[in-house]
Length: 175
Ligand code: AR6
Image (cartoon, rainbow, N blue to C red; front, side, top):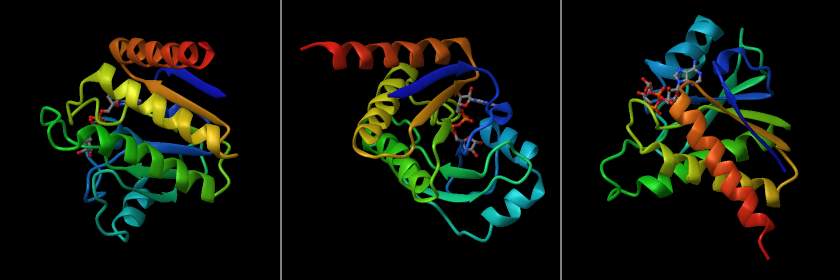
């Protein structure tokens, strides 16, 4: 199973699908959302604004315009409120829904940022574990995508995702 972690800026990665950590209005914003919209150009926002709202845990797909990708999947992660508002389930759901949309367009390689780990304040180690498990479970049962990369913009996020992937591999190897 090809799951990788890289350090850097997601807008520079060549991939079939780049995933955006969007807000429910799909209206652009700060963080990785701002970077993706700047790199894609104004047509991305024009398309997003035709799509209506997207609920936490869900995702929508658009073209990628000037990005080095075919599509952008905009998924809406949960805001962290302490763990009592279904945050874990919603984080898993937005990763799962993203992969379903990517598979529908025949994507082989999907690149995720650390959804909900910035402005939405999800604890990073917990988010990394949920993201890694959800992606691995999906890939174990579906032909596409066959490669997923997590791109991390900060050292602590990079460490958390590497640890989560290592734990995944060691749990798969144990009898
Ligand atoms: N490449 C990769 N990762 C990045 C980049 C980049 N260029 N820039 C930031 N990150 P956030 P959220 C990391 O806040 O928590 C937006 O305003 C960042 O370091 O972008 O899901 C939306 O419109 C962090 O690890 O997304 C929403 O309102 C991760 O991306 C809200 O923020 C996610 O941080 C979504 O919040």
